[in-house]
Amino acid sequence: TTTRVAVLVGSLRADSVNRQVAEYLRDHAPEGVQLDVVEDLDALPFYNEDVDAGQTPADAQRVRDAVADADGLLLVTPEYNGTMPAVLNNAIDWLSRPYGQGAITGKPVAAIGVTPTPYGGVWSHEHALKSATIAGGIALEDVTVSQTSIDVDVLGTEEVIAKLQGAVDAIVAFSPEPATV
Ligand code: FNR
Figure 1 (cartoon, rainbow, N blue to C red):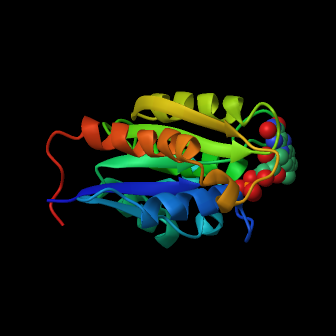
Figure 2: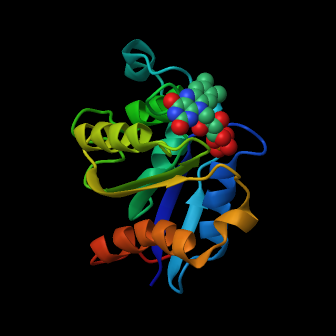
């Protein structure tokens, strides 16, 4: 059996450090754990109840299916202006509906990320977990990392990696009956 974790990255930047963190964790996933980065979150339209009441947009269905098929959700995000980037907030909104039956319902969620400021994106992670909880998910820990020089070689200290990996471990530990791939 494999525990599957869907990963949403809050930065669209090609050289995003948070994307690098997500891909690092994916490429170093523990035995029996599979991380899948859900791509192209910017293809999601802004959430609109009128649109959702009609034919679900293909990209919204794709993102919903990716999360519905996973055992848990890992949010890897920087902070924009004291909160999570809009692209991540919008994805959570799509995952929160239909009300009470959104793809995020009942899924363990962890929020992690890196910013180059001393705050490390602490509000972003707090807000993302609050939003994920109200959307129906179950908030686990958040891991906030502050790095002034941000590249994976710098991140590659055992302490930081272990902290970030801990969020994946928490999701896996939460899932008593992993889905079978
Ligand atoms: C930022 N940044 C930022 N950082 C932070 O710690 N707190 C904040 O409130 C903000 N606000 C903010 C707003 C906007 C519009 C931008 C573009 C940036 C800096 C941000 O953390 C930095 O750009 C990170 O490197 C972004 O992560 P990625 O893209 O490397 O993953």
